[in-house]
Length: 187
Image (cartoon, rainbow, N blue to C red; front, top):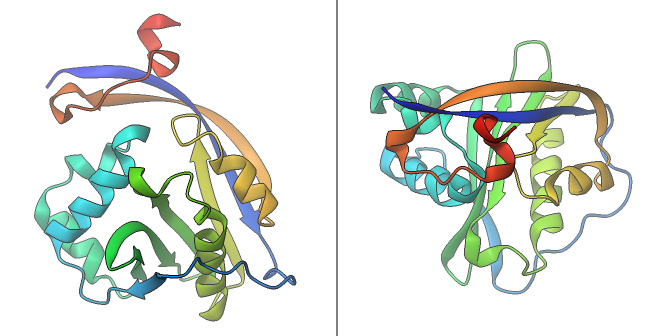
């Protein structure tokens, strides 16, 4: 399999206490729905649509049975943002045995980016995480993600723990556009 070398800086963040300020309100017509029995095709639609512009590749390479196992894991929950009945984003939480909850995936669909709902949707994810058993909330983002991702995480109360450079072997058969700024061949 042919791959494209991609270099990213991954920033790991954590939040040790729930936010004390009142949450931002989603705009009219927006609602977040937990999807307790998310199907593999719907999950792939969410993941692929949200992540297409940001080089989300890893779960695209997993076979359906592996995605199915993730979705059926009782520690994982999928939450979909709908605006006027149409999917506009999703977040995935993973509750770990040690009390940590990880915001595994978070993002808006391209048509919802820049519409003023990202911060409220992120706050929904944070509040949902803290509503369950949670002693620490973690998330990571990287230089392939939307440029506002890291500032939004910090503004929402996450603190940077560490930064790591990673080399990703992104399979070329996925059809993802690799930004020139991330291409290891251009560095």
